[in-house]
Image (cartoon, rainbow, N blue to C red; front, side):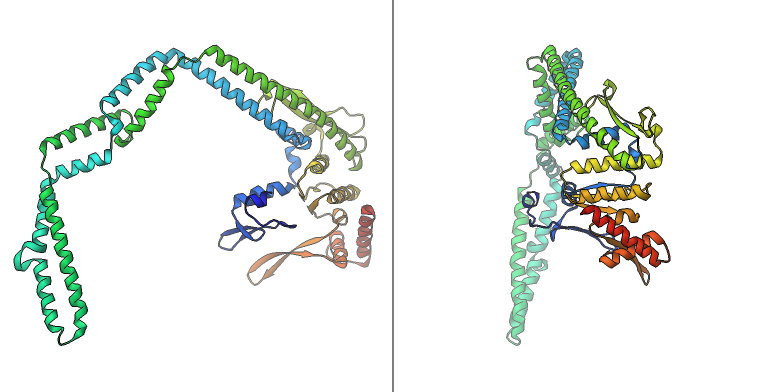
Length: 482
């Protein structure tokens, strides 16, 4: 639907492409058709969700914990309703505050507005055309100069007997007409001179009419200067240009009408603010209950995942508590992720008890659980397995493989235990040619996968034993997906 609404070709495949040239220029396309970066970003957010390797660091922040819980709950409608209810309450509260504050200074403001509106109306700024006014003033102030200049130009062009441009053009045209009998090629310049002669005559006629029509009206000029002085003073008073005075008058009238209208009932505004607050609190409470339910599900899922990720006996809980200090567009909830990494240990805030490796595993469990609930067709995991290894890494790979059966999953990893679980394997190769370095994505076949897994396992020298281990890992991957 998005592709059709944006006039892009829709088919079984959707290809987003962005090319950045060496000079820094960027080109984007969607299914081969040119697109802007905004369209690329919008469509990408609808198709792809990215989980990065450092996301576990944000787990120590309460806002991030609440955002993760909301993402897991997936109830965007309830979140949006709470945000809108908060905005409605803030608008109603500000309206009450504004009127409450204005009421004391209302009469004083009314007196000032009436004076300013009356002053501008007396100056007749409604019909003001400042550009026309200044143009007329310039003509009258320079009437003598304009008239004499036009008359002098007319004389030189036409009225100066044999020395005028018209006379000179006529003489040369006549001479060329005489020579034309000797060489017909002179006909064209002779015709051009005739056209120039006609244009000079027309210009001279226009200049004469202009010079004769120039007005010398000292009284009108004095009136214009007085009016422009008045308008300039008013503009200075209102901190604007003279041409903007009509808009200033319109704005002042609107404010005056608003204040002169039947006064807004302060109590009704207060009641509206109270009703808006109650609506927000209802939405916030519904969101709180949804978060509480989602928190229990997330806690159960993460606790189960911890047992498989090398944290046997560990527990994970999500505490969702009402807290007025947290009141805002996202409700009134304070969300805390609590963990007990080992049996018998009490639940404590995640940031205080989890080591880096434990934090990475818990983060990975949350990301996989959250991703499993998303409806986006493509998920990207960028080295989310950092900080783990051994059998735990193999279990992570199995989880990602199962997730890949439901949607497209791309995983960037350096762990052979994870790579061996994949349905397909790509290798990123850096190449250097002359003075340029490039990166290439290479699709691996079956033997290529064995070689790459062995390289990830064995380092510089790949032995038959390493290759055998790689084949064994790939076989286990096939079996776990069977």
